[in-house]
Length: 308
Image (cartoon, rainbow, N blue to C red; front, side, top):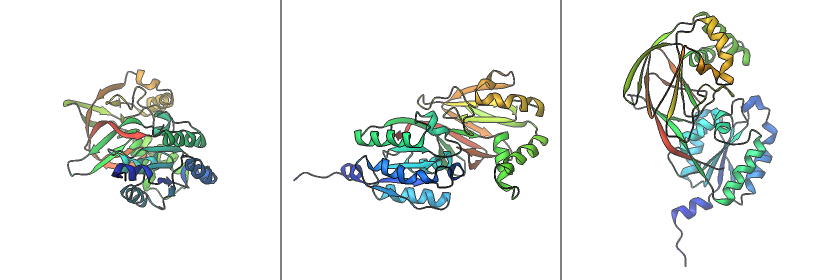
């Protein structure tokens, strides 16, 4: 009689699926049955997880992995991916993102098709073949012991401040709330003093924008860290210096093409470990509210095994 190892049990376990029905303002809601059917072609059971809040989503993923899930799939945008990454990061459990959100930057920058059903085909084929592809993640920590992972970009400047303002507002609803938050924060725009430590080397900068990228893009295709490569074991740091309102408005559209880094007020760095400190900033990682500064961010090579 053959012995059955823990790895054998894991390989035979279900594919756990975390789905956000409100991602992308619900435009892909009707695709979920086809997503589940497509994943089932890999020949493994498929288990749809139930969650109504981000905390419940992470808890459901942890419970599924602890129970022996053979893989975790996130159907949604970068926020849904972010929740799933907290569970699979640093483990051998493979992960597949199905891009169905407003922003799908991690999936796009790690080689998945933009079409959700095409991404499902890629994931199912990888499951059948037992094939995974390791990519890096960024690990954040604070002196108080808080710890988070992210896959795409950490924002710690103007964009993070706008997100924080929008999240505090109760009116208006929908995208207009974010637009109004931009106008309010543009009126209050001022450079802030940051301390950066890049692999131990200290820099003091006055800046309105700080981004630390494992991948190139955030915000649904804005290439804020255009040279970032999630397989090089490094983080890319982009610093937008003493921009005034008019200059920032003029330069910001260039972020979609990544050409903003040629502006004389922009500086780019690369490091394995990045420490960022400033007063009164709450960071946003993968578009999700994250840790208050100061934070330490470390590139962790091969921290997640992608199904592609």
